[in-house]
Length: 212
Image (cartoon, rainbow, N blue to C red; front, side, top):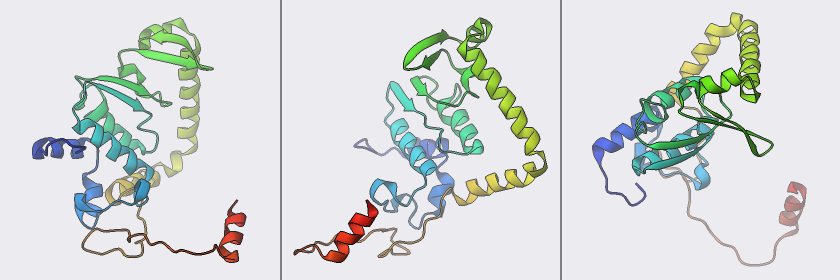
């Protein structure tokens, strides 16, 4: 909530749009499950979607999105674009600045800014940049050629791969083993920290040196 009052209807819409409903069903205490430091018990994709959900719940006017689709699979990517980020999503009436390496959604955005070596090389809408046949056109052409090769090479395993993707969405992107001190029903996943006083042992020093 980040200090905002709880609105059940808005909350439910955000959870669905961020694709978090299946993940919450998996957690022992649902949305009351304790999350470890830096989201240690969440996958990269889950962390990104939690961040998106928190941002959307704030109902801001401007959203700066730094590659939020980079750690999700194709099915979740499509869900987030349709229900959250894209022209029909929850943020459709908001100003969205999307930084991304993915190019499959670019034909649906209002304006594209192409960066090369830290500088703006081109800007405009999809049709304008394709007609210009500059760096953006080359990028799209190379991507299309690579995609065709990948589809041709993976034709035999396409059905099994699709089954795996569906399974990921249903069971979640990362099933972490239970941590010490985890209560099966309470949703608490971490123990209270403890402190020890005294000299650092040689064993600890050696372990630290090896880790370096």
